[in-house]
Amino acid sequence: MLTTWIDDLSQKVPLSRQPQDLQAYGRDWTRVYVPRPSAVVFPRHPEEVCEVLRFCSERGIAVVPSGGRTGLSAGAVAAEGELVLSLERLRHLGEVDPLGLTLTVGAGITNQEVHQHSEKIGLTWPIDLASKGSCQVGGNLATNAGGIRVIRYGHARQWVTGLQVALIDGTLLKLGTAVQKDNVGPDLRQLMIGSEGILGVITQATLRLTIMPRECQVMFLAVDNIDRGLELLSHARLQGRLQLQAFEFVAQNCLEAVMKVQDRACPFAQIPPAAVLIEVEGRLDNELEQWMEQVMSQGLVRDGVLARSSTERASLWAYRDNITESLGSLGLMHKNDIAVEVGRLGEFVHTLLSEVAPHYPGQMYLFGHLGDGNLHINVMKPSAMDPETFWEGCQRADQLLYELLRNLNGSVSAEHGIGLLKKAALSFSRGPHEVDTVRRVKKALDPQGLLNPGKVFDL
Ligand code: 2HG
Ligand code: ZN
Image (cartoon, rainbow, N blue to C red; front, side):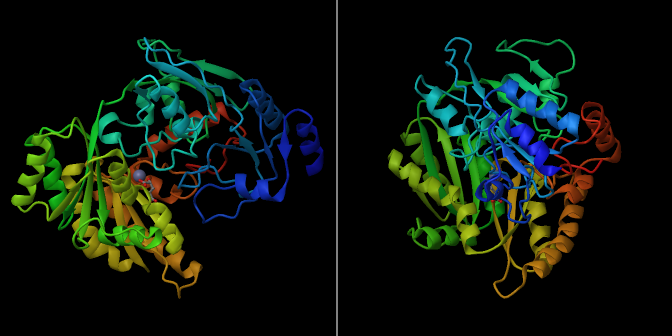
């Protein structure tokens, strides 16, 4: 029975059942689920995506859309025998429109390819992620990706004018165009962006571009704790009048992990309790140097490095960009991706460290996008503990974390989405009426529940 439909489908589109493909395409960067897809299909254009979806709809086959598979909430995991629908062959790369500042690309184009393509004429798509070399535009939009420049540009949903989306019944929707001003009622584009593949499959997008800042400067500043980091944020904006492109937090143990794994020297005279990586627009001038001297003489900053070349800028960024990878190579990590309003982040971290952290069964590593109030809380499994005991302990401690977030009106998933991994957390950030309304939309578009089943919520 199983082989029959797979044989039929393989007559229509490129399909693989190679064990290494099933392993690779059935998972994302989460390491919690065992990939078990029945097959992987590689449609070559949007019409083939529709054909696959129509086929699945007619035969009642569950299908998991798949991009660069760099997600951290298991939104692209196929652990229940689903068909994986890889969008990686949708490689259309249009011409940049230098007047309208738009670019149309297929879902399988990587974030970095978009950057390289638009940078040729001084433009950029300002969604910038540590995983940019692998993550794809379709996935960036399906998850409404955030990243390091949200403080300046917002999330991915703000940088799209048009979207092409395939529904489970095989309908291809064209939502919006390259026109900037197009205000004609409810916006299905925005409903699809961030829907994590449960409502439709993004096949193509017209992206809104912006001018790249002529120059940016990068500083890595050592601080005593997160409160000093937050004071520095305010100082940078209000006294320094700095246009921030990024304002990132790195706790001591994260810095040490990168230094150890990547064999990098400490960028400061001694390892500080925490550090803040700041990227600002503009030239390296006296004003910027004076601002840095000022925050150091005021005691806000203990020690600091200001990059003086593009090589130095890249090497400072490496201490931040390589945290996930370095932690991952040191041990098994339990991850949370939370946000509270920036003004309450200090309060949040104090309660986290004093009341929640002691309940986690391993050491906590904090880093993330301080300027957006978004912290990544990673907990490492102690080497002697078995994974089962570790996950159970983490889940119990998570309840305390989510309660704390609910009390602060915070988010249980600031930029990584819900997927499979954070389903139990959803109710701490979304009320029952809201979840139920989205469930009704899901049932209307996908009555059999075939598209990315089990993700975000159960039907
Ligand atoms: C980052 O900001 C990513 O580097 C990954 O969102 C976060 O590994 C994580 O927890
Ligand atoms: Zn992040």
